[in-house]
Image (cartoon, rainbow, N blue to C red; front, side, top):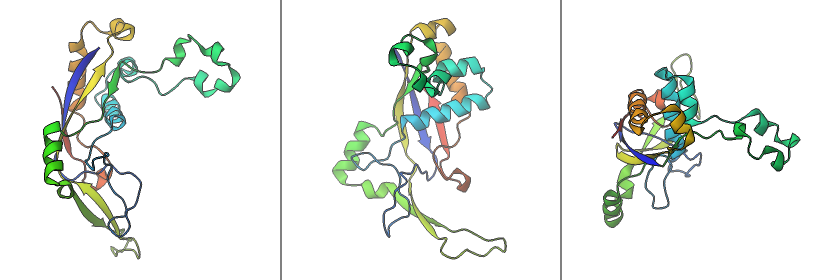
Length: 205
C-alpha cells in the first residue's frame, strides 16, 4: 500500500451541500463534520478525479484500473444467483486501486478554530433569485444558501499495490504522474459551479 498526498486550495466561495434547510438562516447549508468544520468527502474527490481523467483522455483501461467500475451485470441481476454462486467471480471485483479519503483542515488549524471558537467565520450566506425572460425576478424565487470561505485542505489517496496494480504499472510513480496530469483538469469542486462557486487548485504532492 502506498499513500499519495493531495492538496486542495479553494480559491473562492464554495459549496458542498447537505440537502437540508436551516430555517430563516438559509435554504441550504454546507456539509460539516461533527466539530462544525467543513470538509470535502472522499466520494466527491473520487468523482472529480474520475471525470477529469476522461477530460484529459486517459485510456479507459487505466480509468477502470484506477477507479474501478460502477458495477457488473451479475450484481444488477443478483436475484438470479445465490451468494455461493457469486463467490470468486472476478466480475464482482469492481473496485479500483485508488481509495480516496476525505480532505480536511490540518490538525493545527482545527485546534486553533476550536480553541478560538472561530467556526462562524468560516461561513457566509449568499442570495440568488430566478429571472424570467424579461429580466424580472420571479416571485418567491429568492433563495439563501450557505457557502464556505476559501480554505486549503490536504488528504491522502491510498494506492493498492496488489495484483491489479502490478498488471498495469511498474511503479507507484507512474500512478502519481497520471494523477498529477488528471489534477490539472480539476478547476472546480462542489455545487453551484455555474454560479461561479468552487474554483480550486488541486496539487498532487
